[in-house]
Length: 239
Image (cartoon, rainbow, N blue to C red; front, side, top):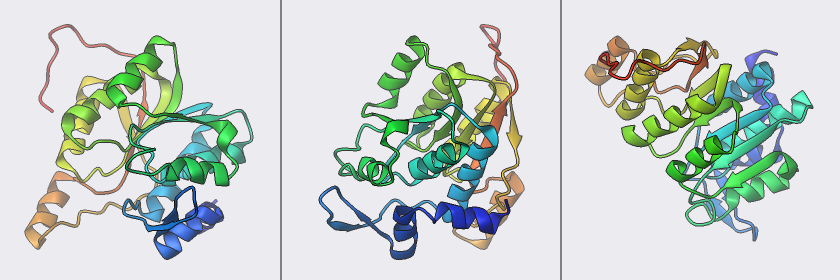
């Protein structure tokens, strides 16, 4: 399936089509609100395509907001047609996001495939790990400071089996780029090509040039886990 067909598949969902064409979302009562958390369509096409190719049984996302990434994942799981499910971790779904993400999942008919953990990642992820949860694909789009992203990838790595995939949104943030560098130097992952054109645009020509040299792209990035690995107790390399 080529990019244009996959874009059509993603926006075949009437809720995603409404969001991407009008810039509006609707709360559970039907009130229209401006969508102030917006992920480019091409990123969601890449996420949809990655889920289709991976055929995961369990997907875990950090951050749900209006459910845009949730719907892309759930549409792919539904197309696969097996018993795949999505776990979303979002402590503010019923607060800041007014339960719009959950409502969008319900309106799309995906409730049976979806579980929301309305808890902070630093509480939910250790509990999931302790309960024996194993995942096949993770998508990180939560709090964008280095410590939170590092915490997310630390726990997700422990739940992700070799061959599983970890994706990151908003990779143009320096904190997220730094966390990815940790993943590549302190764990066993390799980047995979999801056919997203790099975006090195910055605040100025100089900033864009520096981004290009450092290869810090705004686009989502995905990594496949090659093996379970724990470094020695005093292991450290620059990252």
